[in-house]
Amino acid sequence: DQQVKQNSPSLSVQEGRISILNCDYTNSMFDYFLWYKKYPAEGPTFLISISSIKDKNEDGRFTVFLNKSAKHLSLHIVPSQPGDSAVYFCAASLDTGRRALTFGSGTRLQVQP
Amino acid sequence: EPEVTQTPSHQVTQMGQEVILRCVPISNHLYFYWYRQILGQKVEFLVSFYNNEISEKSEIFDDQFSVERPDGSNFTLKIRSTKLEDSAMYFCASSDRGSNQPQHFGDGTRLSIL
Image 1 (cartoon, rainbow over the protein chains, first blue to last red):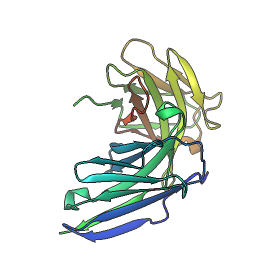
Image 2 (image 1 turned 60 degrees about the vertical axis):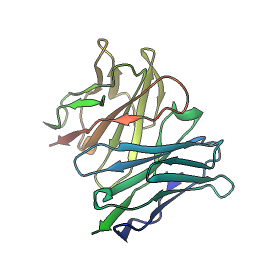
Image 3 (image 1 turned 90 degrees about the vertical axis):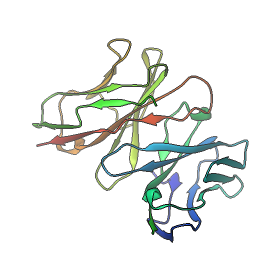
Image 4 (image 1 turned 30 degrees about the horizontal axis):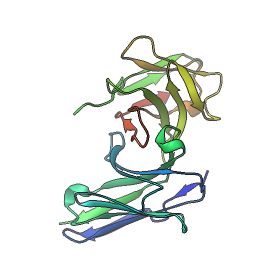
């Protein structure tokens, strides 16, 4: 199942700089997109989401951008902090989120002090 | 902050045995889900539950699996006769009423089948 793809398995950035995590999807029927952060031995923690009727959603240091024509979304973290080091998953859903989430394979972000 | 609670954190079971994984969703949430993650693989959807019935299930969720909400707070996943390939992290999630509500996940149960 490759409906949601995160092509970068890892990313390393310096503290204070911007982290940009990318995600592509193939199913044009997805209408709700989410980003989760996951630490080892914990469950995915919800970070931020975006509906398909928007192209940007911002929450503090986190901004998600959605490009529907390219079927691409990205998560920007500014400024990056060492505590942001984790695995980040994008996920997509039909029916405004009440349906199954389809997850990407994750990107491991390391923020260097 | 309210959270989804799962027990046990680790379950070791002999192949062929029944296992029940337990979850307490966030109290005012109405939609409940089970996902699993086999080591090194993606998080996969198993089943969703709303209004005391299954609303959606994946191909993985075959007759060996069942879910139940036995009371007002618990949500369980039962695997009737476990197989080696059922070894995985199992995550419970819940979401609130309304559209565009995120699913909130518990910390998972690591199921090891011997």
